[in-house]
Length: 74
Image 1 (spheres, rainbow, N blue to C red):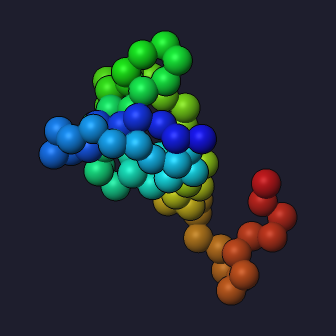
Image 2 (cartoon, rainbow, N blue to C red):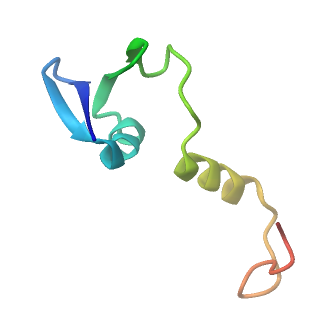
């Protein structure tokens, strides 16, 4: 599925649905189009990305003594 986007240099293009998250996280797009209209990154509500949630969890998790992390955490 292709999604219309507005890149940071104000050009319009299309991205595959699977590419949107990477472009949002990297700041390379400022808007994307969905059925309800244009969504402005940082202004309009969007779903929390899986990547940002994992990174947030990793940053807030206390360090483990095990070289493999806390295998019982979940």
